Length: 509
Image (cartoon, rainbow, N blue to C red; front, side):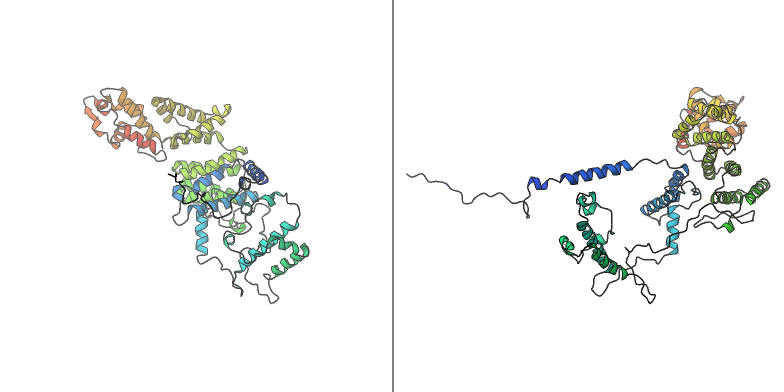
């Protein structure tokens, strides 16, 4: 019986995974020249990016831009960031980074809002359509592309770095809209070599350029977006600071949105009279809104005229003291920032006094990073100053939890440091009360709390305890009012945590 042979009804063929021609490993592997050029370019770009030491007013200006209270709902964050980069880049290019009044310069979101208000109906111009049916900007982009192709084929050496770089990684010679257009002229690259030399191609390009130039009749045709604005006259730059000509003592403060007018700026002799006038008005009327507005106007006139001398230091110091007295930390910080730069130039003033204010301010805001920077920059001479020494002892008492020493220093604060300590003394009183309730049992006299926590009277200390919801801990007995610490336990801990969470607010004291 014959053995039947089995055979398959089909022949196995490997499935084809692509529609194009199959590529070998050598074809897939990138060119060594391309890899080297890309690596070298990325290395060069990474090396060129170095850290820049920005001035403190610039960093403060950037922080104000991103503060929550300055965010505008009608201005996008991305648009504001682009405007901020333009403002800072322009100051760097023109060399006015240290000259611009960053404290009074309008924020980018305010500039954008004013631009929208000035030109609400401004729209992007439409691209003119010639009789051929193809937009002019498209033809212009095609002409640029052909000219680049001719130049790349005529220059000769192909080992240039730009010839090895792919077109999409080169600098943007066209905008994003033109890069998505299919250009009508699709002549091959080698056809450009048939031209009669480079001079003929330049003649053709020159002829096309003349189409967009003004005609003899005086009419100027519509030009597309990508035409260079080199024909426009360059802006005239001021060669130096202006000198004011205004003779008025009082002037309201307005934010500058353009170059300052010398007719509205007061010169230095008038500003000196203005400062004396403002000091008299402050002693007589104590109208802070008026005084603050006038001092901001005075500071603005000093800035636009680039006046930096002893008078400038005196004006900023007086404004900072008035702002401290009224609890206006915003204006105080602006004056303190400028005073740091002025003190660095050795222009006089009272640097030790304001150094002590800085230390106390950092205690108020619990800013340990800036506090460490200040302590590292202190000189032995500055540490011997009475105000600085007092501020350093206050910091040490808080760090050690020595509330007894802290309130002794609080009652003997030099200069105007007490205004800053008033802003965080309630927080420290809560911390001291918590420690007292844990250490003293079962009760203590209210007089002891008054003396330990720096109150002026028993009524003031009792009011402080009641304002923080602990009136049930006060009991009146034969020997006087006593605080029942045995019932308090950790009663003041929540109030202390709430006070520590918002160091920028002034608590009940």
